[in-house]
Image (tube, rainbow, N blue to C red):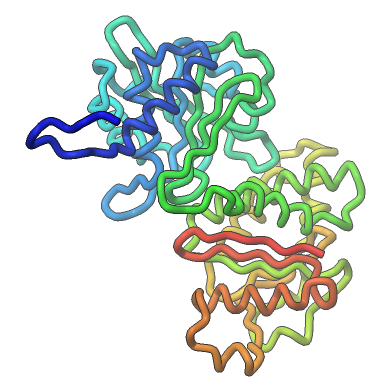
Length: 352
């Protein structure tokens, strides 16, 4: 065991541990840890809970040495150069400050490019349509490792997905969260499966992808969410005591398939507008109610809690967590799936 010099204090640096892990990852990608190890660590830490003027932002960032190849793989277009700087943490911080507010939603992504003098950075246009793959989905699917590129995405506060080509990835937890906790992407995939369990193929795959992408965007903007999924053809449940149940439920399968069969502008608009409507529903208080055949039934719905729960003030978790527990108790009976995300990022999904 090493002995500390007089006056020296022991220091355990999280940054050093993260940097070591990032450098190991970069070795596998073909990018030089000496060139980008420290800046990439800064990008990960800063994106893990990025805010401007107190508001959380969720830009997707890509770092590499070939902008043309990056755009080809990611489906990017029309790169807009913003600035340059040396390969330092300060350049990464400046790039985020200048580009992150531009990269909200799925319209624009941030790029950081290795150039001889350091980094060049900017944004590039991406396809926001919810039936098209996101840049990171395209990267996950790409098998070729010859392109040296890393993608960074915040999955939830203090949880980052670090992605490279050829299926190489890491999930980085930058808090005291238990690493065995359910990842947001896993819980949302479970919900998307529950929402399309009674949809026949090929519509099931298309509709599941639609819900998965829209749910992820809704989770980023949400203060917390509850979702209940009813069996197909259900119009409601005796569980519900208040809320908005649509007189004409929205059949997302019909909208999705109309677009895939016709590729008409009006069909695309119908899908996009329904996606925005669902995001709005999930931003309200209460429960968003959908069905296992892909239908949107209602929102702002509330249930009556059993007396046993009401009388337990010492229970861990808030009202949203307690409501989720009630919903889970009805999965397999009145419900097929229940989903919960708290304001602090806790997430869970229960399916029959």
